[in-house]
Amino acid sequence: MGARLVLRIDFDGRHAVGPGKIRLLEAIRDAGSIREAGRSLGMSYRRAWLLVAALNECFEERVVSTQLGGAHGGGATITEFGTRLIETYREIEREAHSANAGRLATLDAARRKPAPERQS
Image 1 (cartoon, rainbow, N blue to C red):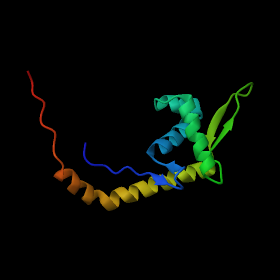
Image 2: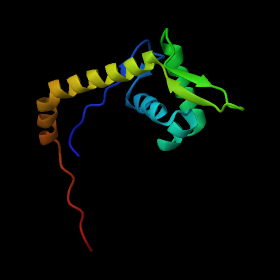
Image 3: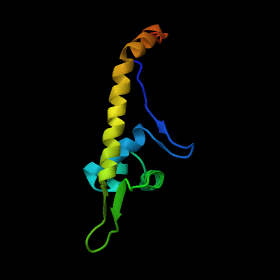
Image 4: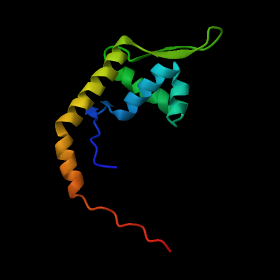
């Protein structure tokens, strides 16, 4: 695997959006559930819920809307703003990768390669 750029947007020292939160939002969008989204990413419901709460706290508009369980079932949906957040993050990510592909290749070519494993 070559060098790769990982993008995290820090806002105020307390809030950030990076690849993990964006993957979680995409998983919630696809699953319609925080619990199922977390499970699909190998994280606990509590961890997924805390990340969603942090995102909702970060922005003026909610990113995820939740509905309590019960007779009508529970669930979670990505809001219009949440959809725009995903799209904006992915656009920034694509542009950053495109703009820096040559630099990443140069750095990757310059790195020390691991020695091949010895077979006994």
